[in-house]
Image (cartoon, rainbow, N blue to C red):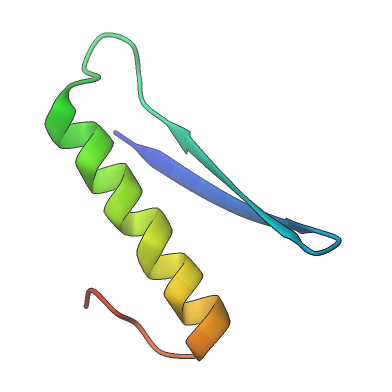
Length: 51
């Protein structure tokens, strides 16, 4: 399962995407990036973008 974690460090938003090496495929990476972008949109704009 892809896990996404965000952390604010000063003026920078760090987005970490962890894919298990056994099941890491392009679909998992895409889902992880979509989740990260959605979380970023919620933080910046206060509402979900990809809901």
